[in-house]
Image (cartoon, rainbow, N blue to C red):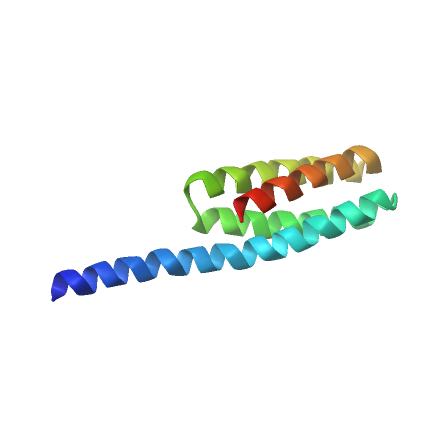
Length: 110
């Protein structure tokens, strides 16, 4: 009986961490898409705002996930940081490209 309870508790823990990661991935993807839209409109400061929010959520998701999914989330975080760096320099086009790369990785992580 103890073994069954232990197995059940382990499965529940694994499933709950994926739920937390999924919530953060959804929010990160939403903000990353908004960053792309703002970048295509040439609004670098707004792109930076959304990219920072997306980065916060992607980092939170990275803390609670593992394996291949984590690799995509980490790559998305790197791309979002590049988007922020370019956006702070008011370079909307390269920032948009980096934000688009982040969206691609976040979709792959889902």
